[in-house]
Image (cartoon, rainbow, N blue to C red):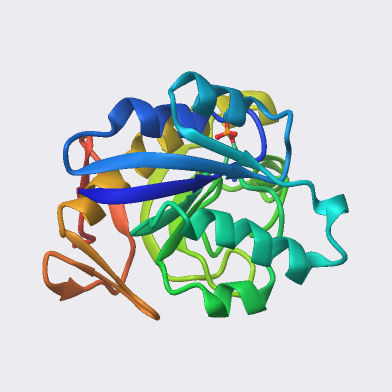
Length: 216
Ligand code: GRF
């Protein structure tokens, strides 16, 4: 069984999707946060998971906070760390030290729209497609190898709210599917590459017909 630790800072809807989807191949063991009052921690506690919150202001600097956070994460001996709406930048020192693979869900089709306000930026750029990506976490923000993406078409009447809702529905499918594929050994993560069913990916997997498909 793949042991999963989740980092989250807010609403926790992706965490809820993960908890719902876990199966004998993988389990969420603990949730770790920089926001003691966030809903994600409440969901974790309600699900009987280890729920740990550390306050950044209790630490001298980012490196000290990250050291404490990842020491807590490591205490559950995870095989995989999933950032599911974790909104704090992680120091490159901490990322270099962690030997556990780490993935993140991001609400855009990377490399388009790294960072925040992705739905507004997709609309402002008059993009015709948008979606979400699951990628490996590396020191550069939203820049690690992309495992998989789910796409949708932007319609004429779309607003930030309609896009956010539709992309979030895709996130709730894509993220658990990626964790499941890692747990079942279909996806293998290397430092600078992603392998799917034994082959190195040259383009992200696509979420299509309710499954992960390699780009043809
Ligand atoms: C999601 O849109 C995720 O892609 C982004 O932050 C949001 C978190 O939502 N990184 P939730 O806390 O999982 O509901």
